[in-house]
Image 1 (cartoon, rainbow, N blue to C red):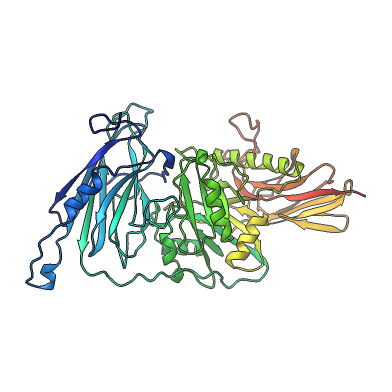
Image 2 (image 1 turned 120 degrees about the vertical axis):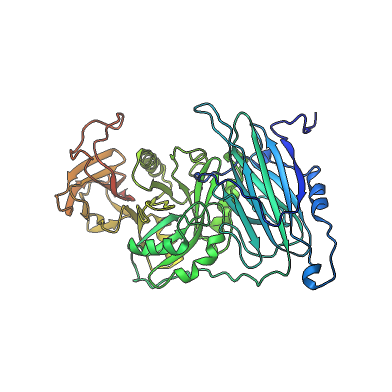
Length: 553
């Protein structure tokens, strides 16, 4: 039986109603609390709610009677179309509300609200994201994308010369636009929504002129560079302006940052004046799907990566190819994050690195490092390439600290391509702040290798593993191989020291280092990783491995 307003089904929610009003401005709407980035669900389940709506929208907006007293008077009056509807539990991931936009519109403004009925403890309540696609369509990865604000904003506007952060300035073309709702959680009672779309007529403003950041800064040649590759601004769900993020990066002693606002490229166009000889700013995006979040690092300025799919759609490889074509990196973000839709379900086979440390150290970071370490052993056993680790702050607003943690990358220079090459190769280590410094090497048989490199030596040749570190008072150094932790040593109260340990390539396929803070109670710790008590404190620094290969002689 086809869906009707009287007989809705989960795949076919009640079609929205359209009403014309004489409002020149959207009505006052309640302000909803912020929530984490909430991506949406399977596009194959999307329902395009066109039946009756496109006609209604056109009727509501299609006729005005000009008064020829003056050019101003002859301009059509601003009109607001109100769309209302009900979404039952099990609604599609995306509900597309078509709006017919006639010629002569200089600005489109959208506001929305939805009900939040009480639910039993432990039952998800209503949460609904919003965005918009223009007359070029809603195809996955298509050209029609004009912005997304998730659930962070209740209203936005788009004009030729400007737009609300998260949205793309540009022409307001005539045709069928779509306001897109993303009901990522629906209460048992369902979700009632109201969307007000205001069309303002008049001459378009001047063309928007983007200011993209340069692809190089003044570097130091081949050197170690510090950078945070996961940051948010007001262009998604952050509260910091781009200029505040840039200032915070400089204050943290960083050489580069990557802009990764959720599901939009709008911030790319404003970073130009905020970069400089001392700070490289690289465009990127955090893609927030219903099966995990991933970072696209090093996108061409202004390029958008779609997020409207699940792991079972098999769409992820398409967008991996998009990022790789431009030389960018695909990095699963916070894979064990406990929030809705954050756990990573796409696998790691097509990733270039993995974010194992996200913000202040927590138990989900421990899980991410353990999983990454286990994959190292399997990859090297099978003769496959291994996946580098990354650490980023994911800072959204104060008091979250930009650069806690960050990556310290060996790059040929301070350029987009050189930094991405260093991260891709795993020539990097992770630090909680610029106060932490280290050098990690393995030496033997007259040869030496550093972080991310391979050392090929006779199987039983003695190898000296050496870590020089500073900035972690009373910390604990751990050396780990494919057999687990094989050496642990405490640092002095001053936080600086050198730790040396000996092994062979026959005993270790790789070696990596961790530097941990003392436990909160000041003790070295007891217990094991199966209990609630860890034998060491939070991470201060973590290296990618040095690979050891036994030569046949």
